Image (cartoon, rainbow, N blue to C red; front, side, top):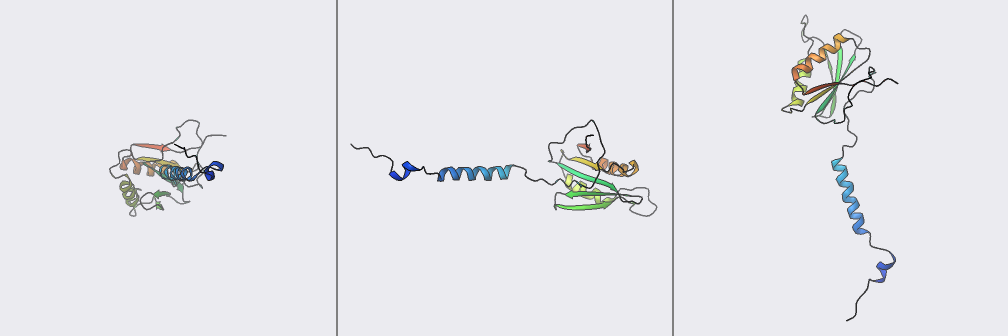
Amino acid sequence: MRKTGMPAAHVSHPNVTPLIDIVMCLIIFYMLVAKIGIDTGADASIKLPESLIGTRITDPSNMIVLNVKPTGGQFAEVSMLNPKSQRSEIFSMQPEKSGQSSYIRSDLKTVLLMVRGKNEEFKIVIRADATLPYRYLEQVLLLAAEVKPKEYNFEAKRPV
């Protein structure tokens, strides 16, 4: 019985179609699995304070970033990226009613509670401007305490 060999067309160059199919499947897999270009909502205009110690935040999941900066008046401004709507939202930390001593805005608290939901791993990262007086930051800290996240983190930069 006579054996048949490879056709002449495949001897000079191999068929790469299966290889291309596998590479395309791998590309699609990595695009679905990888977290490419995650926008955490960090405000680049905030000048962070310097710190020698701290922990690097490596897992951006279950986390919301609150950007706190002074407005030039008596109140601070808090901005955040709402993960539900993927829009940046700005809240002014001013009293809800005139003469009221509480500076916690109920709309910011409502949004944070909605984002937290029943997530027990919810974390808050606070990015405050280096020139921000503590009395403005205190308003945000009190609000964050009412939302009851698993942990708080403060973002700072390392000195040069």
